[in-house]
Amino acid sequence: AQSVTQPDIHITVSEGASLELRCNYSYGATPYLFWYVQSPGQGLQLLLKYFSGDTLVQGIKGFEAEFKRSQSSFNLRKPSVHWSDAAEYFCAVGAARKYIFGTGTRLKVLA
Amino acid sequence: NAGVTQTPKFQVLKTGQSMTLQCAQDMNHEYMSWYRQDPGMGLRLIHYSVGAGITDQGEVPNGYNVSRSTTEDFPLRLLSAAPSQTSVYFCASSQTSGSLNTGELFFGEGSRLTVL
Image (cartoon, rainbow over the protein chains, first blue to last red):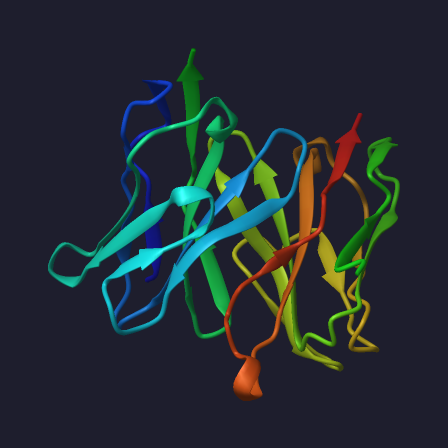
């Protein structure tokens, strides 16, 4: 069965520090992989996606993610976090018309 | 560009009442879906549709009905509301055919439902 695991429920970083959010997936074939961000009281916005090709993908707001097939991972990174990055982040896998989401990681940014 | 529009944004129901959450998109997307978001559980798929007249169940379909009579609209019906259906509901759509198949989901702003 398809599944997505985000092992970190909460992460706190200082402004300017680097960030890595973890995502592991379970799927029988190469999936479509996504990262979404949700600000409080808002819907979800796409940060980046991976379908095929280069395993390092760039997204909006300075985020990037790396697909590692051997580890079934799709971790999200940012070199320097800004206070406005505080939000909840969701990893998702898409296949067979169903999009399966992880439980999310809530990011807190300290000034 | 309106994108995905959900109404109402907030609703309070009593146990046993019925209601419909409306979802409309103006992007001519074939794929539409409903999710519920609960603390610590992420987004769980309720129902989805790959085109007008075609619907299917997701992960948590019990207590909900959907229909897809047009490409634009995908209403979610709660037949007899229960406190366990207190949640935030999101409608999302995606283009899933032809050269525009990006797979990206476009979300509405959500509908917060409380069942007393």
